[in-house]
Length: 158
Image (cartoon, rainbow, N blue to C red; front, side, top):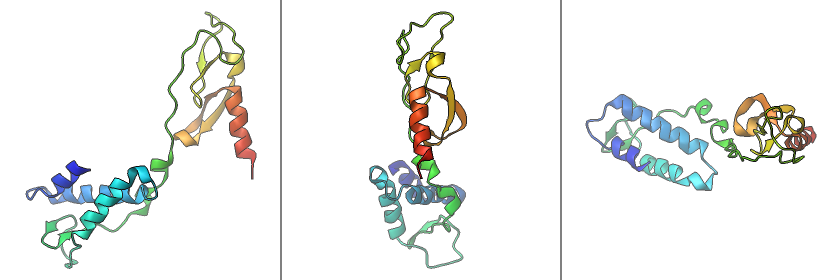
C-alpha cells in the first residue's frame, strides 16, 4: 500500500494510472471493511480521502492537486465480498496409507486427496464430490467421506 501511495504522489504520473490506483484502493477499502487484519487498507483510503476531495467537479478523476485526491464514484459490483471472503485451501498431506481405513496404497489402490481437508484417502473413502464455495471452487471436486457428511449436513440445516 505504501508503494501505491508513493506512486500516487508522483507528480508526473499518468492521470489514468492514478485513477486506476485510486479505484483499486477504494474498492479494496470497501471490500476489506470489517476485517481487522486488513484494516490498514481502509486507513490508507481514509488518509488519501482526508487529504481533500476536489471542490472542482470538472477536475479529472485521480489527479492530485493542492486540494487532494478525487476518488471515482464507488462501484459496488467491484467490491463483492466474494473477492475476500473465500478461505485458503489446505496444504495436501502425504501418507503411504489411507488416513481413514489405513489401507496401504499400491499400484491399483491409488491416493486421492480430499480438496476440503487436504488429507489422503483411497477411492473407497473419497468417492464423493462437492463444490467448495468457501474456497472459491464452484465445480464439484473430490472430497473424503467425512468432509462430505460434514459439508452436506451444514447445507441441509435451515
